[in-house]
Image (cartoon, rainbow, N blue to C red):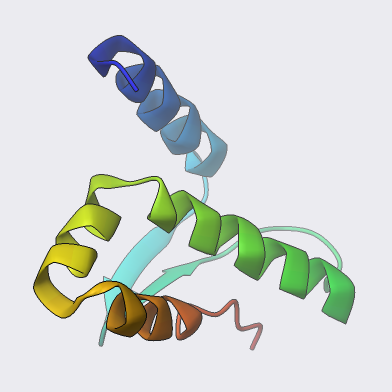
Length: 84
């Protein structure tokens, strides 16, 4: 992916979360969004989409380099969508 495409994608992702309060803490990324509680199928779909975004990010390359592909996959599976 070229630099221009990457920058456009990052801007698009940032726009999706614009206006939603987002914060990090204790290794979590948290946000508040309006709407009905998602179904279990929707939660699973959201998790897969989030994990795919991580796989396409520079962070994924760093994880694979540092931990190896198998361990990086295990770590990626810990990235879950949780509704409180």
